[in-house]
Image 1 (tube, helix red, strand yellow):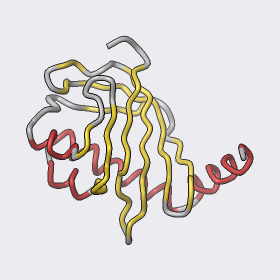
Image 2 (cartoon, rainbow, N blue to C red):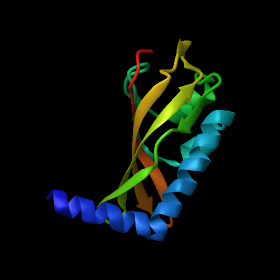
Image 3 (cartoon, rainbow, N blue to C red):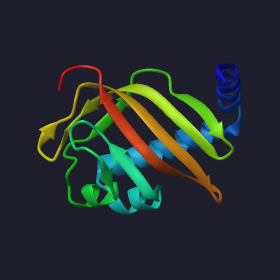
Length: 138
């Protein structure tokens, strides 16, 4: 199984899928930074789940964006963004990132591991799952 996953990861990084995922990631990141809840809603699946140590599981993350819960939010990738094809139309994006800002009044951790699952629906990639795990104490 490990060899199969490695082969799929290389294939996903060599195809237009990588460019599409990176573009989607830039768009949704910008929407979070600007508090654009409508774009976040449009780019996440109806069954989207966001998970972090500082706010727990959150369905409908766009509602938190609309409420202004992400004050000064900024995520800057620190490592190369790896994209692994899990199945046709389903990919995992992972990287480490520096975080800035707060959520629900709590400071974001300085450095995190990020895992995002994207699913192709029609011609668009929608974010289905987003998880951050702190790599340094908050």
